[in-house]
Image (tube, rainbow, N blue to C red):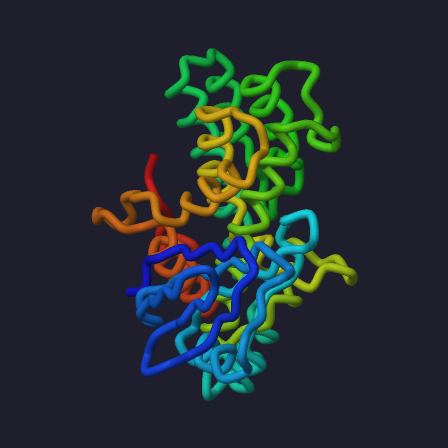
Length: 287
């Protein structure tokens, strides 16, 4: 599987040649295309050939473009991630309400379990309250245990004065990390032939990535952990380190994988659960 996270920060020209991504800047650099999992174009001064863009799509590389402020802005996604994407879309629209309910309930539980495990790891006494929320999760999270858990969780991590909507380093780092994470889930959804717009619980008409937002919830904790452990100024170097979270190693289904590969395994298991209505088939990373 591909594994490299490649970040292009300076003015250059990117092109494709004999299986390699070629970077022509102050120095000539080559990277084997099949080694690249995520390519982040951080500078708006980067030029790319159409041949390279086509090859990146064929290799299912996650390509993210940043704006003039170096924040993730857009993504290169194939029109058809699979040869039978039309059939996949029919299956997606046929997922039963029971299956959707069971899977979303399981996703919420997985997210809160990992939040609880992280609080326990850092010695916070508030993890016990999240344990109570897990016991009281209603079908489809009808009582919004996810929202209540998030309030307790972020208060324990960053203090009672912290609010997710404020403009500060922590929120800037979290938002950047979540955006990179979302792009990885968008790639997996499309690669499996499904539509990112059609979510399970997220159903915002103005959100093009509802399904990806559903799926990524348990993985947000990995970004939270990194920001909590490495609070620094939001420099370009720090943003690069946030991207490298995708290369960290986690355990899933009893085996060690990079976060990128764990996302692939997890997404496929969720889609299988949605097909058969059995949420127990979902595989998620362990903390």
